[in-house]
Picture: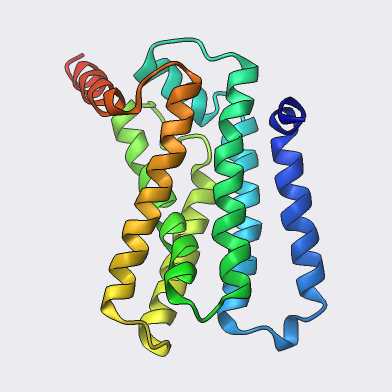
Length: 207
């Protein structure tokens, strides 16, 4: 079952989120503004996974070739998408139902903003030679939606300052856990990953 989910992870994610979006569309007039933002995140996150994972020279290949300096098998690449799939489902479905629990609502907002920053920064870090990293088009759309949702929360919702901080801490904790699962798949200890990244990036800049 695990191998099947790994092989068809994008299809599974698309089916779950697509079904959710279609069902939610029936109640669209009664949805809150936050719930409508979440529907937008669901749509963009699914599109992003397709662009990032299935375009030639996907993001996992970019990391493997430039940072890890190793070949990553198709099976390992597929397995690496499972933690991401779980993260996306948790970051969208939970805040949809708890749309006034601001800490949960902020999670997809931070993810969208972070994705945009990472993909743009990746152009310089990896010296791609072209103004694009796999997944960047949808990542920029995620950034725009995340920024719009954040502006709405600041302007119209009673979000306390500490909730922004707690949500950021929770986001990075979840992201770090996800990354630790990914590095374990390729046989690298997560505590060594930052050292490897720094050394590889330094070497790339020294060329």
